[in-house]
Amino acid sequence: MERWSKECERKSMKFKSAVCIYPYYQEVPIYEFFPPLGLEYVTAAIEDQVENICIIDLRYEEHFEEIICAGADLFCVSVNWHYEFDSVCEVIRSLPAEVRTVVGGKFATENVEELFERCPNIDVIVRGDGEETLREFVQIGSPENVEGLSYRNDGRIVHNTNRRLSNVSNTLYPNRKRRRYQLTYPCPL
Image (cartoon, rainbow, N blue to C red; front, side, top):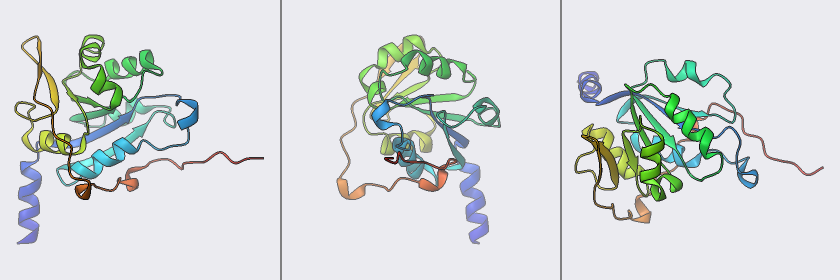
């Protein structure tokens, strides 16, 4: 019985393979040894809704295109600051247009219109905290009526209502098992 219910769950999943991308080749110098925690949080929020998830951190990945093109049907990109913004937009524009692309993060929240303009293949932008918003989007498979989302619809940008902040007691832990890299911390000499 349990096997049958898991099979039914898999068939009802809107997305099968999500690739979460940290698009910075270099980090803001004071943050260079931190993992992409925002992506680890959102993977924790959607891991039971998507069959396969991986996190790609471009600070450590030389040939990410091979991983991205391996059957992904959802890209989640974290855009947190203006640092390296031109190369971040280049990474986003290089993603296959037929794959649903969702962008979130602090800078994305504050610059929705500019991101849509510079990256025509962005389908959805998450404004504010992404965990609950992305989870709801992944469950439904469509941005309509999901609070905290902006999306393209017939050539115009639609801004759904803002999502209220969730209760702190509902906070997830980051999904550290999705890390593909050995993180190193600077050591004083």
